[in-house]
Length: 458
Ligand code: C2O
Ligand code: CU
Image (cartoon, rainbow, N blue to C red; front, side, top):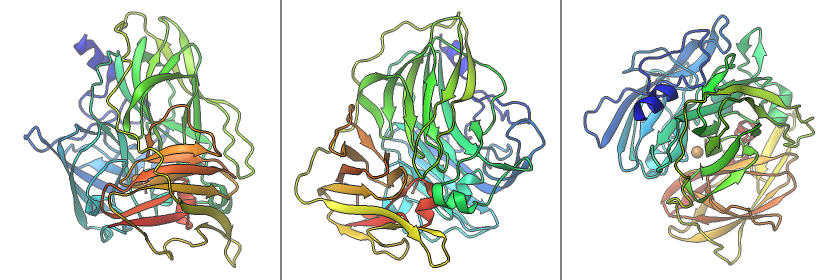
C-alpha cells in the first residue's frame, strides 16, 4: 500500500517536473537535504529573476525560489520544504534578486531573530545571504515568502510551502499540497505592478493557479486523499467545493484540530491553510470549484470557476476509519479584562492614493505596542475598511473568540483570520514568546499601504 501511495502522490518523485506543458498540480519539487543528521534539515534557497510558464505556453519573467543544492530551475511555488517537529531546520538563503528581501516562515513558531522581517533583521541586499535556523515546533502546513515589498514580491512568484509532520494515523491514497494563487496577465506575463484599483481592493488576478500552473489535465485521485491547501494569493478569498466529495477538516493554521469536522465548503483567506481529508466515491469525475466570495470593497463577486478537474480511480481505496480526536494545541480561552483595541481603517493620501491605518497610524510610522511576556490578552479588532481583512499575527497563534458576538463553530488557533468589513472580532492572544512580532493584513497591498503593526513582547 505504501508504495502505491507514494507512486500516486507524486510529491516524493525525484527531480523537477517543471517544463512547460506539465501542469501536474502535484509537481512540487522537494528540497534536497544537505545534512545527513536525521535531526537536521539543511537546505539552500535562492531567490532570483526566473522564467516560468503558467500554462504551457512560452515562459515569461517572474521572481521565484530555487533549491541551489537540488540544481533544478526556480519554480512557482518554490521548492517544498519537508520537516518534522523537533528537527532543526537550517535554510541558507541567497538573494539574487535586484532588490532587497527577507524570508519569513509564515505560521512557524521560532525565536524572534529568525522571523525574517525588517523588524528582526537587516534586509538581505542583492547578492547577500542570510541563514535562517530554528527548531520546528509544530506539525502543519506553513509557507515561506519575502517580508520586504511583500505584495509585489509575492505577486511576482516568491512563495513556497513547508510541510511539517507527515502522519496523523490517517490512511490515504495520496497526501497532496495544493498551493492556490491567482495572477493577472499582461501580454501573457504575470503583471508585476499593481494598478490603482488593485491598491484599493487588493490584486485579484483573472487566472487561477494550482501549484503555479493553470491545470489543463484531469487529476487522477483516490477515494480518500489528504489535501493540505494554502491560499498564497495577495487578496483572493477562496470558497472551494467538489461535488460528490465529502470534506473532513483535520487541521488548520496551527496544525491538527482537536476534533475533525465535516464541511461542505473549504474557505481560505490569503495566508490561510486547511488540512482536509477528501473522500470521493469510486469512478466519478468532478471538479474542484472556486465559488463566488463577497469580500467587499464594492467588488462584484466573480461567478463560480473550475480550478481543477478530478477523476476518481476506482482501484485506490482506503477503508480505515478517520480519527475522532487529534493532538491539537491548547486553546487560549477568554483572558477577560480590558481588551487591546485595534481599529483598522482606510483613507486616502493627499495625492488620492489609498492608505490604511491601525489605530489611525500608518505603518511604518507607528510604534510597536509593548505587552508583557506570558500574559494573555483579548484583542478587540474593529474592521472599518470596506472589505474583508485577513489579520495575520507573527510568532504567536490566537484564538478567535467571536465575530460580532458570534463564536466560531469550531474552536482552534489561527495565525490568519479574515475579519469581515464592518465587523468586530474578539481574539485571545497569548504572548508566549519574546520579541517584536508583526501583525498585518494579509491582503498584502493593504499591509504594504499601512495596515500593519508590531507587538513588543518583553
Ligand atoms: Cu505571511 Cu507577515 O506574513
Ligand atoms: Cu507570518
